[in-house]
Length: 182
Image: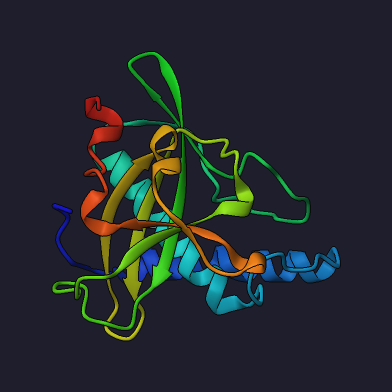
């Protein structure tokens, strides 16, 4: 976890809000039922903030972003709503998971974990990136990433309806491992 806490920029929040609003509006119009959680605006805002942050991080490191989950319309479901990066001539699929954490992100207590929904396995991506945001103080921190091939070594916790892999934050790789080799 080498990433430092950064402040959310107005442009990042505004862009994420636009995408979140579009998801909710298109979902209502298409009569989609939320699979996880409420499917409301705040939940989608948190997710889209993480995706905007990840996209900006990839671009700032000169990564070729071939596809992104940020799209103008969400009136049809798409299994390809992940990042597709081109690195060293290979396609690398990246899922971004974002959590709104109500604690200061610069000094998280031990015991925090990155959770991946076990019901979504087998995973169709190469890496999952964990982003924590704090909407109260408008900060974020890229916690790190995990390779799909290493997820199953972590314990699964939760009830039958909400089982998830619990990955201790200290075991996440720096996000740079995606483009600098593992």
